[in-house]
Amino acid sequence: PSNNRDSFGSKFGVIAAAAGSAVGLGNIWKFPYIAGVYGGAAFLFVYLGFILAIGIPIMLSELIIGRSSRSNAFGAFKVLAPGTPWRFIGILGVSAAFLILSFYGVVAGWSLQYIMLSIQDGFSSKTPEEIASLFSSLTESTVRPVVLQLVFMLLTGAIVIVGIKKGIEKYTKILMPLLVIILIFLCVKSLTLDGAKAGLEFLFKPDFSKLSGDGILSALGHAFFTLSLGMGTLITYGSYVQRDNNLLSTAFSVTIADTVIAILAGIAIFPAVFAFNIAPTEGPGLIFITLPNVFHQMPGGFVFSILFFILLTVAALTSSISILEVVVAYFKEEFQMNRKVATVLATVLVSMLGVLCSLSMGVLSPITFFGLNIFDLMDWISANLLLPIGGMFIAIFIGWIFGRKKVQKEVSYGGHLSGVLLSVFMFLVKFIAPIAIAIVLLNKVGLLSFS
Ligand code: PHE
Ligand code: NA
Image: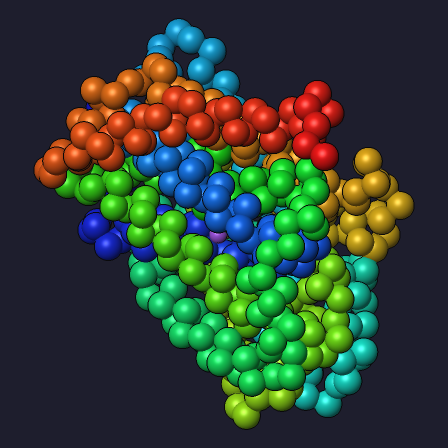
């Protein structure tokens, strides 16, 4: 309806921006660390199953909702289902955006610090033990993580304030391919290490007896987190996509890019984990402890480590801007704020929550809920609860409310969507996705039991 809405400039720009949102800390920091915690290959296979059966259909659903409504995550449901409670799914999404960005900025802050450490050649003279304690003293200190997180949020806000075409689209297009190249170099190096065989077996040879209900829930949560699903990121981005774009092929491209990069990160990290005797269950510090050891041993490691952490920060930025954009579009369109005011407000609010996360491994570490510190709690609630619940309703909405006819029209205005593909998609969103998500969540609550 409104003609002053932003839009993406090109088809490649759409894919780059959506892939920029998807590819981030989730792939390189979080995937290896939770795969490590939940047993490696068994986790990987369950996660891949969720990506295929649930991730792709929900990604397509979000893009459809966004483009057909041309609205933010909350407004979209007001346009498509006026006067119904569906719009509360948007509120759920905006809340998830706050929680995710609050801890995401902390990890991105660590990455900023590691750029500086790399430049000072801070790893080359250190033993593996010293590298490990370097990480814990960083995360436990009181001032540094807060400052780093604020700097990162400032960068995020600065890009979002500029808007879609000039800000978001421009930066993502250039830097993503570079990240992949560095990652491939790291894989090659890692595969020459002593731990290569053990690392690859850990990542690819499944032992399903290691799989727990928690592992399955985390695999589901991570499938949502890594693809940026369940909270309206792709509804928001979809609202800027023009009609000549084929949403199905966009969804496929983005999913493939995201998955390949996560697996590359696993190949880069697990051989090194075993070569340097680091516990795969190390947790959030896994890559920050493992990779410096690899750089240490690499010819040209000095340059590689600088480049790697710059690109990791950039990958985090292209994701964090997509999270902030959910909140900004919501403020902008629902409260008639201009982009500047909306962005400043959203950035300040998120940063405040981020300060708590920054301190949660140091001075605030005594504060725990269900045994989780604030950082882990934000991560857990958003990824394992809010995103799957949001995703479940998005699937139900497309499957049961929006319906097959409109889906067919919206996916591709130019091309033709084959009847078989359409039927598979409708079956997945009507039945498989909602039922699978419900089973995994109910199992967690203890109303059902797998084991
Ligand atoms: N997908 C991003 C990543 O893997 C994180 C993200 C989650 C971005 C939710 C947007 C929405 O790092
Ligand atoms: Na991702």
